[in-house]
Amino acid sequence: MTSEQVAISRSSLSLADLVITGDGSGPYSLTDTGLARPGRTVRATFADVSPHVEGQLMTQAVRDITSLPLEVIVSGSSSADLVGLLDALDAALFQFRYTTTVTSDGTDVTWPSLPTSFDIVGGSVLYSRRSQFFEVVSFTIPVQPTPVSL
Image: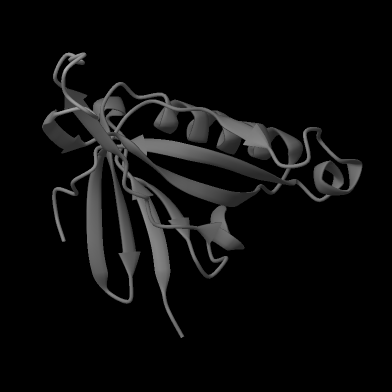
């Protein structure tokens, strides 16, 4: 059985990390399919195309910004609490520069991250969720391709 959590740093907001648990123990928790590893994308540079040479000559290749997809249940104790939790998540994700740390079975991987926003899963706020003070959101955090810690 794996133990996972995601921590979004909020030091630029002078706040503690926003923690998304894998076991449902906090106001932010991962859904069953809520965490995936970032893929790898290559950004390549090619020489000018020559009419006398077949194909293209690649002159440089580097990893490009990739994405960390998440689906999260946000649970409050009241409507006002839920709105506050969603606002806190929005503020954390909209920071200009921050880190995202994924902990899985005691192993941390931290990526430098860029601003993003979230969407409500299903596209609208359902009465059944609103009356029980929770919402399911999904977002994709743009992350630098190389983690700063392994």
